[in-house]
Length: 60
Image 1 (spheres, rainbow, N blue to C red):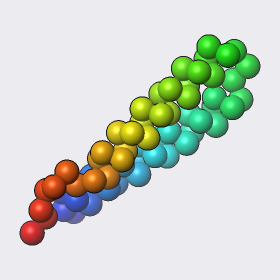
Image 2: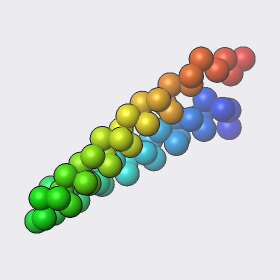
Image 3: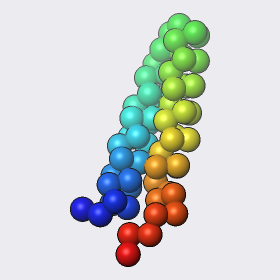
């Protein structure tokens, strides 16, 4: 597995986790918990975008 593949797989995992957090936020009855989960999901989505981009690494 190349470095780019590893970054892509990691980004996919983070996007899946972010989706799970979004769903949990929708089900949360406590507004503070809902907001915490949404914020965590947002951060994971941002990280997944950065991880999905190979960061200029040329896999040759």
